[in-house]
Image (tube, rainbow over all chains, first blue to last red; front, side, top):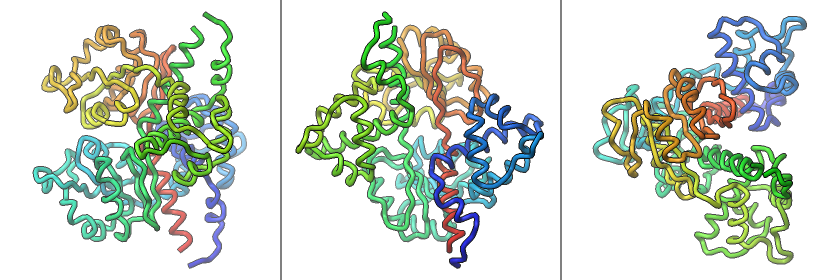
Length: 221
Length: 221
């Protein structure tokens, strides 16, 4: 249906940067809830987690009025709201492609499960891996059955953790399987098939930002 | 020495966002060089890698005049310049703390080595791991020798890939070892010791931005 919808209008222009910050707020709220904190002001939230209070208010105001004057935010309520905005109010089914060290680490990453991402399948081409399970019990399928299993398991998101040289081929296989979103850990540039949203995590970029920081330090001492 | 220095003045206010983009440009230039491309305009660079041409010009102009009228950028030269700005014109020594699946994946991640990060040591507390090597030959030390080995190996950057429950303890051990920068993959919030720059990679944030994208899609169909 193409019925206009308030939430859609509000979210259409939200940048990836904002969703990144919402994820961080959600992480902080999880921590607060675990600590038994029931309400918190934007100021206290900012101080405790080294964030920017004005930015918090601005980001949250964009999605509605969540704060209560004189109280701040109700931790539980705000958490539910953020989960809904981020589409985490339902379970998302994830498959990890590549059962090397990185794939195994991702399949068993406790943070994914905690936020409602269900890792239901892994894929690899190595004889010795097909048919076995990750430590947390995710079965490893033959990559030749990729499309069939992706469809059967109704996978929402694919995580690409295969070697750079096979990344493009595997990504092309994902197209047409019903999967609309791919999280890519492979370092090269990829041609993204139509109908797929690809988000790349480049681990080197993070290391380079630290390198930049160190280079600055050296020039001042 | 506290001599004012043009480069320092220029780099002081550069946000992490900019260094992230410089890293991405560097990755593109590597690709172009591998393909035998010698010069490229900001427009062509933007088109080929789905970037923003005006942003490229703005980011690069900030560090000096790298473009040549009618030619664009010399790929090799610009690459060297970017490597220098990012502090990659020297080798940086890295240690990975935690030799689980994630630690092993990071120690053997080919992208790190390619950019001049030398992974020289890993650490773990498990009997069966201490004394062995990662697939690419990085030795695994006893975590009890952490400070001693970090100093002896003149480590610049530590990568934290230990379970969440031991992350704070291990991070506190790193303080005072001479290491000034930490790349953290542990999901919890950490109290950062003075004198250390910590950059966290939260893998869940990336998945959540895809979840947000999928939720938007659902509301429009």
